[in-house]
Image 1 (cartoon, rainbow, N blue to C red):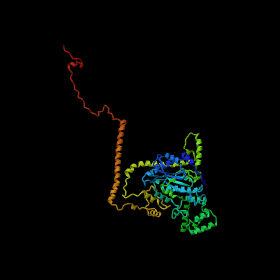
Image 2 (cartoon, rainbow, N blue to C red):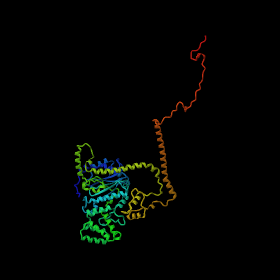
Image 3 (cartoon, rainbow, N blue to C red):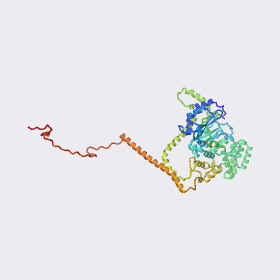
Image 4 (cartoon, rainbow, N blue to C red):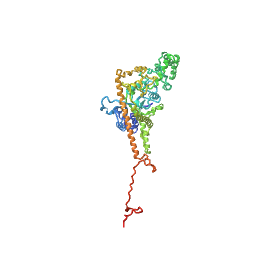
Length: 572
């Protein structure tokens, strides 16, 4: 069982922030890129200073500025908020009403105090390896459900440092959800509802598919064998309040008061009452069987803190912070090995600083330099965080590369020729997609889907849940004339055609200019083959006019008898 540690001193916290806290990993996780973007520069940070002084709306331009400010203020912990429409520290210079949260990770919080009514090993703030099994089951159910039903991939589980666990979902579709959409999503996933005064908190198993065998196995191992939740009188009385058949309840109470039996034997007695009632096909038997599955869900299904997930401006403790009561680090957890995770083995700040001192002595003999956290037991947790960040950055790079390739296609062919009325907003689409009844056989559509649920059953479920439903028929102006609709359609289509025409002409001109430049460059480099030379026996392709020879008869004194040039002949 974890025990409360001594209060942390400011000197220990300052040494941790300066030498051990992985600011670069946290920056890459929040920013999704190596260079700062608005995801980081317009992100809100909140500091809890010494003396419980709470300082909100802090923002930074780089990771170095964040580290400098943290080391200067030396907070006991700091929390992370959403990305706003402007820098949070400049909010007073922005027009009122325009400073709103835009993007935020979808977060979930599971606290062990919500299981105090069913766990028998610990209570209040205490936690041990046995009751951590409740958290491990919740992580398994939520991780698989979110990945399968909603298609999210980038899920980061972080131990809270004391008795709970946090989930951060960094997918683009999850970060763009509004408050209404988050509320609808959490409402669909919430199964256990009601306070301490309500005994039956689950009622979703009537005429539904049977529970997976894995959940039943975990219920037997954890609730019946390990925790023995129904062995005591108060335990089995809570169990009997969840069974709707009065005859079965009377028989079971009489038997359990007379004999001392284990929780597993009591569960077997309830199955016998189903057989005595005529089996699962009868009315009494089916009600008892549905109540048993509700009991399994009530004792094993994750108990979510819905208020943390509903609002984008809710702040949540940053990973790798120190819990002020236990001194443990809020480390990431691998959901695939959550059963092997033991909160008692999480490193504390005193342990890390001692390991750092030993590593510094060894570093004097070895000249190779490493980050300080690599010399401590914090290394595997930081590496787990870096692997998560690497996958997130790789998806961002692929999306940018694909966006560049799709630019021309979207320019030429993505011309909207739809009904002239206003389109359905993304809020209406996702609200219709996320609001079927809890644990229904039809899961909600993922956030990327655009087709809303328009069946009467879905509409009735929305009305029953209290969510306002907007009819798609009211979103269009039914009284508009045909001519105005035609003009509106033309005004919508014509700009697209003009843009496509200008783009085509620009591409042709660019290709012609590039071809001409390439031709001139090849001529300058004499890349083109020379013209063929014709042999002398062939007629020259270029004909010239022959010059006419004019013969001049020489004078008598200019030639001799032999026709040789001599001096003039003289007479005697």
